Image (cartoon, rainbow, N blue to C red; front, side, top):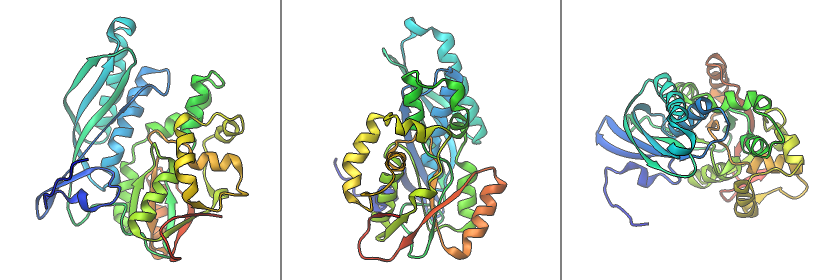
Length: 315
């Protein structure tokens, strides 16, 4: 990719930045991200909510406040009809409203397979944003949502499960990361990223490399949505999960002998996943309390180690 050498492009100096960050002044920076994907559930309104929550997540992961959003739509209007698209966009609009932002427009194209998401613009103070950089030895690692959405939605598409079996996962995917980001800022976390297509394994490795230290994760501590591990045992890891396994697992220490279903959970690509937070032990109790008050079901899954290297260790 071509490089842009603009000193105002702050995200260029952040390895694996979750969104683009452009300084407007000493006290204000623009945060921008875009994301869209094909349906992961059958209900069009829920699909719109999930896609919007996922699109907003990268802005929250930078500690920014979403300001505006634009719809990104690909849709087979002649095949499904405008009433279906209206429900998708209504779901997206409701999530944008919940996030305190506004939809200012968008763009649509005719396509054989539906796709929906948002281009989001937010604001952040350049000195107060969250990023993948900053995890320090001794920090606790906190995950704010359970894992397994890829396994479960694959099972749904394969008619192994029904949408009603995914109630907890759907609620999790619809949940905004705004409260979790606010708690992270208030508690003063060291580093932050959101867990999406690269799975926990990929995003944890990115944080490790960006911060320059090893991250140690307790496999048995990983939280899973109901029936996700059962789907892993059935071999329903999606294609993206297999790509994550192939690319990331050679960089991980402790894979051999690990529980196979939990390894799949670690590699499972997430849709609208939670935040991975690195926090000093002195601030952990406050962080967990704030997350709990906001309704986030957070789990301590490991810690940052000072061992040589910048990788991922499984225990």
